[in-house]
Length: 539
Image (cartoon, rainbow, N blue to C red; front, side, top):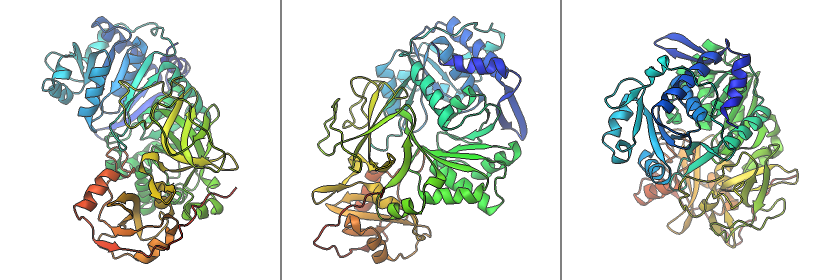
């Protein structure tokens, strides 16, 4: 098998239809399914004739766009392993990639090729290709005169296809390996759960979702901006693309989705949008309300997943009802929905989690623990398998992932997320995971972002206000999260978040900010002697 075969089947049926649409110098550019397939076949010939062989790894440093997609398709076609090296913490990622795989190829921009000569690990790679011109690298433009490769390389389902890195907010970035079998499973699950349909127009800010969208025959509008830094995207340009191209489906991370919805509120609703999928980081209920106003005709869906396993669970926005929201405000955590068909979700007991444990003790519904997911969409492992306190390990059978996320299943079989296991804060004989507190404060009109952490041996709630310099009602905020028995509430100008999504709290940097005195307002609430019982979601 080869994962590219799914795209080839669609391309054979929809050859003349637009696969990729983008804006270049104020002009609309389009590439058909037939054109994208032909380009990837010619690139495949260029790669193999240059000396790359099945099983070799190729580092890819390209912006997301038509060239990125054609190169990715060509690498899959050849049975090569594409290692995507984005600019966020790239040095750590390069160390993992160069030491743990047979890297024999490099594909990059002219800027990336210039960097290659300055970095010994990159300079030693024997086969280099450039999108443009650079001494010592073959231009991708040479593929135009190469004959198209007729058949994709035959690959085992377990053969490595793509390597992408986690954001690294909970430690060292890890290189998750997606095999050809995993890609096919992801494609099948996403087609069903995200209702991918041929001919629809999509705007996706999550690159790997685009691979599935193209495989289903959707037309993909390339977002203007750098998808390696989602939080910095120009939402005014994205909104213009939605309106200009008649986008029907939007796929975004929470921070981009929130800013995009606010853009619509300041101008006009997105009348063409019929479905919105939000994932990649915790999705707060208030974001659902923003999108119901931004795209009144759209169905809003939360997608829970991660680099190592995608998707895991989904939730339609209307299912986050009044009862569920009251539970979230009371500290029950975030509802992320029912596990997708084909995924086995169970909860492993906490604490005393031992790294490498392949046989965790599972707990009953309503009991909090670590979320464990099994299924064909689960990555079989990490490149180099760096040990990061056991978070996110893949067990011995390669198909069951200990996610490192804390949560529980309620009586209806729905999954609730309460935070990262490693970020839990001790409270008597139990532990409070941070999303319980952060989600409980999400609807407070004065709170732009909240964080909960252990600092200086105390339970601390940190608040970033909507208005810089605002004085907040600290006692009221403390009362809202009394279930966590906070010992300090502080106001900071900014809660640090991850560089990729701009949505995941970086607790280590926040602790450093507190230690450096970057605090504007302190409050020490009264904490009773009796510790409160942690709330659960009602059935």
